[in-house]
Length: 498
Image (tube, rainbow, N blue to C red; front, side, top):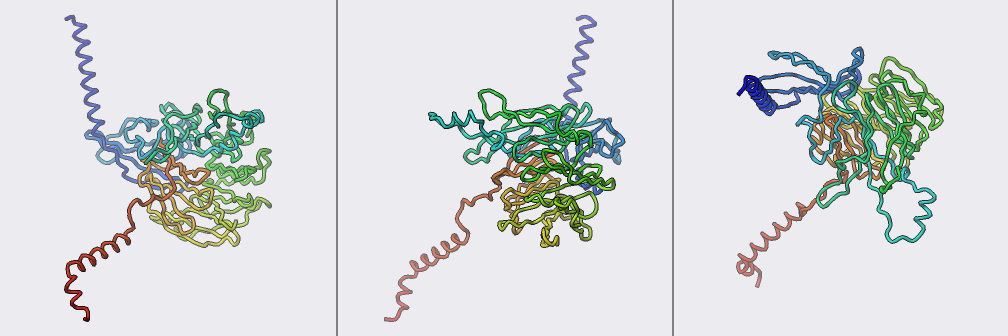
């Protein structure tokens, strides 16, 4: 063997030895959440994650906000920061972790992953998007051997790894819902119907127009409108999103918007910025209704009433404020009680067409839901519902259900009348729940997470397959009496009067 051959063999052996050693080291890694905390300045949950290894220790934290490594002056510039801990060596610097590739991020409990942390999600209104044309309607009137099957429900998802070379793409995805099978709930298909890479811009928030007039997405530099398109082909229900460069010029460079929402009828659009600027427009003319700059507090969440009269706005500090959009004036400030930090807000329609405003809040170690009368703007109820920080909140279209997600990855569905828990999925995700959205029929809850998973949960309480407990007790008692009678029949008859 030549000298060069011996050197090559020794080098190859050394490389294989190091790979085997590193593989064993990573196999022994035990991820654990060591601390959860709430960023009170921005109202954003953060999770402290420790990756404990046999000969290597490092503490890494990540936030549910997207991060932008190219702008270090911003307080939200890094998705992952590394700190020195007692008795540990400083880990080498890194700009991001490819979360979908980590074994910790594997989908569980019916979850589906599409390769990036998911920050926003919604249900496209297929009844309006797939509305047949005049030619299609004429063909439908003609006799046909078999009617076309109805389209499968679909969801729109957005997120990514942010700016920089993190290795995690920024993308918008449209995925179909596979129908439920025997013994299994509906689930998202593993292959998306459509995928749009968004380059260095991560989609952070989205609002789907309720009448099919596109999707407004909030990116780090501003908002963009994407239109639905139906490409020609054999599959008539394939959806495509195309960016409309001429629309939303007013919002193209306003910075990151932490809240984006269409009204229920789709005639109003509201956005709330990280810089505190609140904007309300008529859609699609983009005529300004409310324009309120506020450099002291960021907008955390906002919600339209179903009649489009009121807009509730929660900020990172202070009370919740309600705007009357007919007069374009603030009509109520909903005060906080001692220690309360407001989070999300949603209007809900009652069967008598009156409305209730629900506001989530953290108070000490508890998460709670507060209900407000929309005439007097006074509190009418409050209930502590969790000991975990609430990271997502939603109200069902039919007004019967509430849902919340936590930084620990759990989701719960409550009845809106008594706030009784109907469905609870502990650790539905391995990371912070970032978005919750009910389907149009309120039967399915879509949840997404920073761990790159999206999952569907049935909102119907699990049906009891056994016999009622009281019925079983009654049957046991009757069986005991019958047995006793059979064993002592003669004695009992003798005791009867002759």
